[in-house]
Image 1 (tube, rainbow, N blue to C red):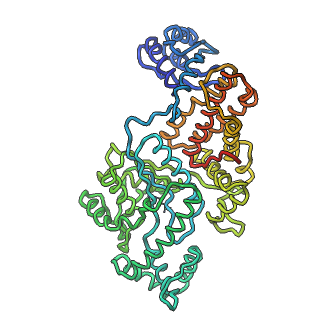
Image 2 (image 1 turned 90 degrees about the vertical axis):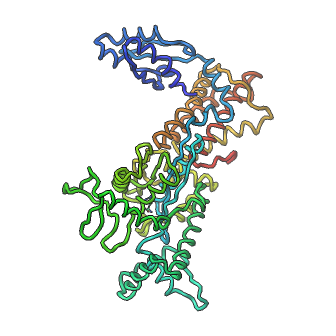
Image 3 (image 1 turned 180 degrees about the horizontal axis):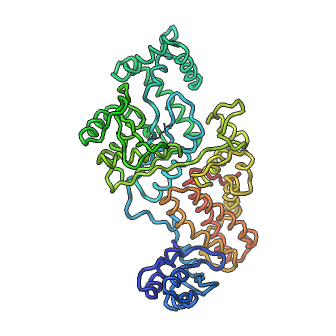
Amino acid sequence: MNLEALLHDRLAPALEAVAGHPVDPAVRASPHADFQSGAPLALARELGRPPREIAAEVAAKAGLAGIADVAVSGPGFLNLTLTDELITGALNRAGERLGVAPVTRPERIVVDYSGPNVAKEMHVGHLRSTIIGDALARTYEWLGHDVVRVNHLGDWGTPFGMLIEHLLDAETSDGSHSIGDLTAFYQSARAKFDGDDDFRTRARLRVVALQSGDPLSRELWRTLVGQSERYFLDVYQRLGVTLGPDDFAGESTYQDDLAGVVDDLIEQGLLTESDGALCVFPAGFTGRDGAPLPLIVRKADGGFGYAATDLAAVRHRVGTIGADRMLYVVGTPQRIHFQMVFAVARQAGWLPDTVHAEHIGFGSILGADGKMLKSRAGDSIKLAGLLDEAVSRASAPALGIGAIKYADLSGDRRGDYVFDWDRMLAITGNTGPYLQMAYARVCSIFRKTAEGPGVVMIGEPAERDLALALLGFEPVVRSAAALAEPHRLAGYLHGLAAAFSAFYERCPVLKADDQVRASRLGLADLTARTLHTGMFLLGIEALDQI
Ligand code: ARG
C-alpha cells in the first residue's frame, strides 16, 4: 500500500479548502513522525499568514481515517502518525504481490540494453548497460508492462571487411575457419589493417562485397556474428541476465531500411549535403564553436553509420513493434547522439509525441586511482575475467555475481563509481552480500519451525518500524520504475534489511507466545518475500542458505 498517497488524499481536500486552490501536500517519510507535510509553510508565504496557524487549520479539516495523530510541529510542519490498524490491515492484505497491483494501463516498453560489439570483448561499459537495463526490464515486466528487450549488437560496418579478410587468411587446410579468442582475433586483424596496404585494400573491397550481398562474405560474416553471440549469451547466463538469443537485433537488422530513411528525409527536405555527407541539422544542437551540429545519415563514401541505423531502429520500434515507450540504456558519452536521433525522428514524424523516448545514461566505472577502470597491464578490463574473479573471491558464485551487480545498481546510475572488491564484497554496509546474508537469516527462522506465518499485529516499536518499512515497497518500486532509477530499490532493500535486524535483535520470534509468535513469523515472512522480490527485480539471486 502506498501510505504517502493515502495521506496525500487525506490532506489534499483540507489544503485546498484553506488555500482556495489545489495544493500538493508534499508528504514525506520523517524521523519525527511516520510522515510529515511541509505544505502549510509554502501556503503561509502565499497567504501572508502565520504558518502554524495554517497548519492547525489544515489539521482540523483533514480527513482522519487511518490517522492516529496530526500534530503541528516546528515552524509549521504537520506530523502525521498512522494508526496501527491501518498498517497491519495493509500488511495482512498484502498477498502474493506484496500489495503491488499490476499497472492498470500496461505499456509496450522497448528497453535497448547491453549492445556489445561483435568480435570485441564486452567491456565494463557494456556491463553497466547490461546490469541496469536488465533491472529495469525486470521491474517494468513485474509491474505488468509488456517489455520488449532489444540487444542492439554492433554487428555491421567497416570493421567487418578486415575481420572477414583475416578470417580468410586464417583458413585451415580443411577449409574451416578458426577464430579462437575473439579479442586477439580482432587485434591481429586491426594490426594487419594498420600496417599492410594490400590488406587494407582487400578489407575495403570486402566491405563493399558484404554490403552488396556477396554470399561468401555473408557466410563468413555470419560465422563471426554467431561466435560472438554465443560468447555474449554465455556471459548473460553467468550474470543471470534475462537477455536471450531472440533479443539480438543488431545494427545489421536495419540495413534494408536505410535507403528508405534517406528517401523519407529527402522528401521532407531535412537532408543537407555537407562535405559530401548527407546530414540533418536538428534545431538547438550546436558544437563548441556555436556551429550547428550535424547528424550524419550517409557518409561521404556512401556508407551508413551508427546514427542512420538508430534512426531506422526508431522507425521500426514505433512503427512495427508498436512501442509506447523506448529506453536506451547507454553510457553518458552518447547522450547528445540520442538527443539528436530523437529530435530528427520527431521532425521526420517517426516518433510521435505520444511515444516517449529516453536515453538512460550512466557514468563510468573507475579504478581505485579514480581513473577509468583498467587491468594491471593497462588495457581495458575484460568482462569474463572480472566475473571469474568475483566468483573466486566470494564463497558462492551467486554472492560474487550479486556483489558486482549490487555495486553497480546501488548508486545513482548517472554517477561514476569506484570498483573496489573489498567494499563490494563486505558483509556490512550497503552491499550485495549484506542483503544476501539478511535474506538467508530470515529464511533460517523458517528452517527451525514447522509453523507458518500468522496475522500481523503491532506491539513493540521495532515491530512497527519493520511493518512501516515493509509498506514502503510499493512506492519505491513505482518510483524506481518511473524514474528508471534502480538505486532507489537497492537503497530501500538495504533499509528493510536493517529494520529486520533491529527487529530480530529486540523481538524474539520462536520463543514468543502463540499470537505474538504467529505475528512475528508473519513479519518475517513478509520481509523474506519482499527481499526476495526486490532482489529478483534487481536481477540478484537470493540464496536461502549461505
Ligand atoms: N554498440 C554500441 C556501443 O558499444 C551500443 C549500442 C546502443 N544502442 C543503440 N541503439 N545505439 O557503444
